[in-house]
Image (cartoon, rainbow, N blue to C red):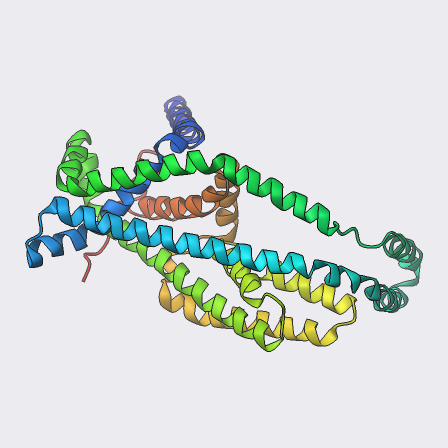
Length: 370
């Protein structure tokens, strides 16, 4: 009996390794090839309720309704992306024009920097004051290495060149995604029936049982994150405008995007900025940034649980692992996709999908939607 038990464990471990290798190979090699079609299927799934409404209320043929909605969604996204890029490049251009004046003010930071650091060194234990003093002298004597405007312009030009080189691939991706969205949406019932027939009966029943709840949960989580990102952007923009921070909307937008990433948060921007302001003698700015940070986190802690339930959350370590694996396999997009995938796997585990590996875990089908 013990030998059979050990063999069963080894067999499960072997199957698990094969599954993990298959998942890695899919995201490493196949995902870039099928990503436009996966996105098209997701868009078609989201558009399906509206297509049905157009069919029932306005008697529009499915082909016409699907085509109009596809053009509307993709056109809206394209126009929004164009205006967003124009605004970002305008803000960056304005920042570069003022870069000389910003850099010219940096030498005045040396004196308050030295005074503040010396006060901290004197407050430290005597045994480590010598080490801290030598390190501070080296930093202050070497100064802060900041690229010149010409170097920054050259870097920006190289980025633009890289983007220009990626245009054909991006254009092909969107053409494939748009056409696939239309064709899948037009024949959505046929496509879903074909997919259902390809699955084994037991797996098909379990998939149909949990599909609605998983889709609703992930949609709820994404909607909550979008609302939270807009709230964070509004809070930061208001705070930066009150503080008269240059390029308040640009900085607030970048910070809100970082806040949308799991684990990262606005502290990645505001806390180092506040520390730099304190070191350089801008105590009022430091205090103000900390107040903005505290308010934004207080609002998030109050609003987020009401937008999305605690049951969708992941442990921060699991979220961090998912982000790291996603970034290593598929880049920045994986940092967003893999935490969502982890949430899905968590709920599938709770509903008994992995009973092969966890035989004591009983299936708990989701409650029907109200």
